[in-house]
Image (cartoon, rainbow, N blue to C red; front, side, top):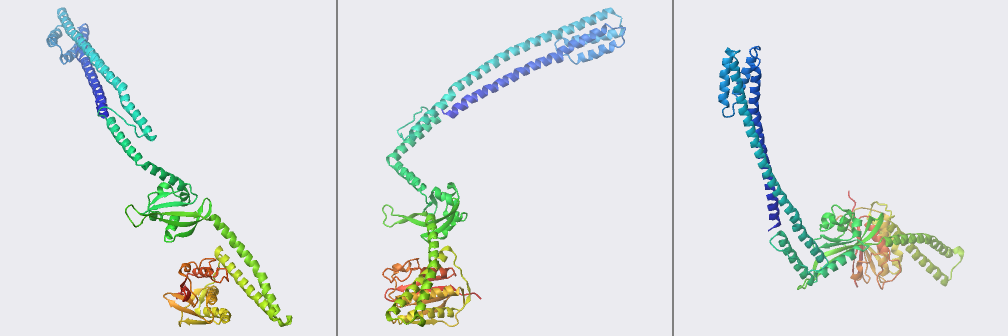
Length: 571
């Protein structure tokens, strides 16, 4: 029998017996109440009326109000006839009372009246005795029935108290022990309950689960999950924030460091679309804003300080079984903490700025000394001395250029670059760059030509820094061009941009290096190392800080074209 049926049967039978006990009690109490009410309302009142009439007859004929009392009580008795023979006795009393009214001094009538009253009282007293005996019988029956029903309720309740907890608790205890065995990887554990109760069905389900766990254990899936947990623990112990995405860009794992920098809880992120989370979280939005770039440096306020992270997106591609082409199944975003390197870089920048600034003074002194040596008042120089002074001038000029680039680079890195933008005409910029580099070009017999459209629009830029970039382009073109070559400077309008381009006929730049030439300190392998490798990097910063963009086109054996584009001033 099922546990539910047992509970319904036992508790239901107990409920019915309690209901029967309540019905019996109500029935017998009502019967006793009815008999008591009959005694009071019928027989006791009749006896009281007879006593009042008997007392009033003793006052006749002296008290004229005695007849009124007798008549009043006779009327009440006439309405309270309930026992056999009581009606005839009441009628006789009425007749004798009428006779006594006409002859109140007749002693014989009084004697007859008293006899009738005693007979009437005797009838009611006998009725009281009978009804009392009947009430006692009802009380005895009530005691028997209520006692029997109560004893049966107690017996059923005692049986339920003794058996029901064990019937429920013992199988649960066995189930708990078996679950502990399963938790200890004892998958051979089985449960056996007889009958068709819920526990029997539970045992069958438990045994099926144990069988599945046995199959799972034999299939080594437990080892796979154990490895998965080990990997998750390893990722969570990393000091760099790590976020894992599936092919639908849902977050499938995230370590504690990533939770710390995002400021969110794990349950708020797991299995959520990262694109939707980017609407509510600044860090995730910044990660998505540069999703096409493999790396990007982010400044995040974490652990009560500003920290710098380098974002790296690692795609996860696998070749499914039976397939030949790899499929994208997810992506891992790693934020490498580069705060310490950033602090070292800042220290390096400050050091370079300080050293460069301090070097400018002695270099200027050297240049001034060479000028003094060349002055006629100092005396004529021999040919060897002239060569030495010329070498000193070239080296000091190169050192001055290097220190100037280092200073500008430190300004860019520290964010202290100052732009004095104004509305300028492009023609003076080109003229200044050509005039500045003409001496270098003449030394290699290189001709600098310009090709400029008419009525070029004005641009809103820092004229000095823009001219410096164009001069740097021309200087590099001269350096890498052969003798007796030509360099072309082209300025033209491209949409809403004004493009400055410098084209040379040098040996060109290999495609492998074209994306790196604007990187800091980079120099093309095999080229003449005459500078710091900062010129193009600083040029890029100058142009991009003015809202423009910089680039190059080059082909080996043909030459290179470096260009930058500046937005045309509106209005």
